[in-house]
Image 1: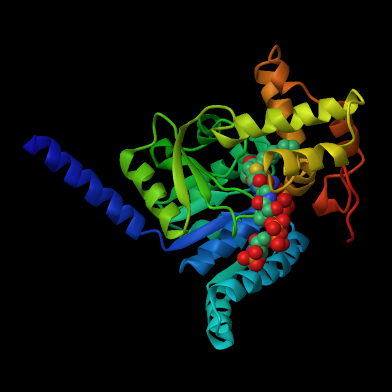
Image 2 (image 1 turned 135 degrees about the vertical axis):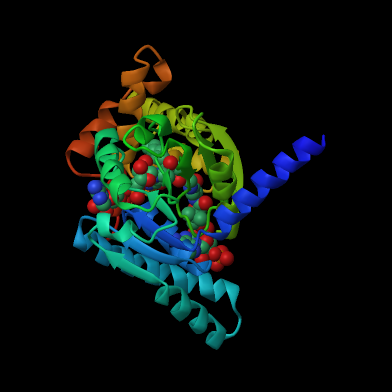
Length: 309
Ligand SMILES: CCCCCCCC(=O)CC(=O)SCCNC(=O)CCNC(=O)[C@H](O)C(C)(C)COP(=O)(O)OP(=O)(O)OC[C@H]1O[C@@H](n2cnc3c(N)ncnc32)[C@H](O)[C@@H]1OP(=O)(O)O
Ligand SMILES: NC(=O)C1=CN([C@@H]2O[C@H](COP(=O)(O)OP(=O)(O)OC[C@H]3O[C@@H](n4cnc5c(N)ncnc54)[C@H](O)[C@@H]3O)[C@@H](O)[C@H]2O)C=CC1
């Protein structure tokens, strides 16, 4: 018992040391998710570098962060001066870059939120592994790819895990923390502790397809698409039905447009490849067609529905 307590104390103090050390955060990818993660990290006192290969994407992200942080501050502070102070301090902690490798040299934690493609993620992590300090924890925000496969690109599997946020990050309270067999206890504890400093409620999940939420949500969305493809109901009526009949804040088609049909397609295509006989992972002609036309949803101005640009 004394030995166990000693071990527990040691691992707790190790993880406390690691989480206390998470001050500098690099977020790679400044799309829907990366911008949200960078914003919340800056709001909660971290020094943040937000990186994207695309300079235009960085500019768009800065605009989205500006809008979102004003909404957050308005809700948080009745006093306008306090709200302005909160905004300017948070934005003061956030810088941007288009060079991933040079942005991790002083990083304690790297959260990757780039395109949902295994080879692209592995290539990025291999480059970062060579440049980041030894203590730096690497995490992927992937929706559907195996964390263990992404980690193979590095020599730091013990300091690698999944940190899966939800869209919109400043609003959604959940963070799924995913460990692979090699993730050390200290790394896992540091990721959970960091999630709490980000104001999130964490749940633990093994490295299984879709973790918890997406394993349930993605088949539900694609079943809604199949219903429309069969001509059983219109997207509008399905959305209305699920909002008013099941209490969901958005119907499945509104949510697909919100998260991005391209991301949805990457997810089911990947799962179908790994498990071709699973009827829940069948792709959809409608989604494939929209994605091939560049209709990704809200972010491109059109998906299932049309949006004002
Ligand atoms: C194809 C399959 C692909 C799957 C892809 C994988 C995806 C993943 O890996 C995991 C995911 O993220 S799944 C998506 C999870 N997200 C959801 O389910 C969102 C559902 N929608 C909602 O909760 C609300 O409609 C929502 C909160 C979005 C908006 O709420 P409302 O409709 O009530 O609209 P508002 O009145 O504008 O907002 C309500 C309150 O929230 C604040 N707010 C909204 N957006 C914000 C943002 N971006 N930044 C900061 N604050 C924001 C807003 O201020 C408002 O606050 P109150 O003034 O207090 O009401
Ligand atoms: N959209 C959603 O609701 C959610 C998405 N995710 C996951 O988060 C990740 C990002 O998704 P989104 O933000 O929706 O995508 P997005 O398409 O909005 O943004 C991705 C960004 O990554 C950039 N990028 C691509 N390759 C890069 C590289 N090598 N280096 C630096 N930047 C690069 C792109 O220029 C783009 O700006 C994906 O893995 C996705 O599965 C996780 C939770 C929710």
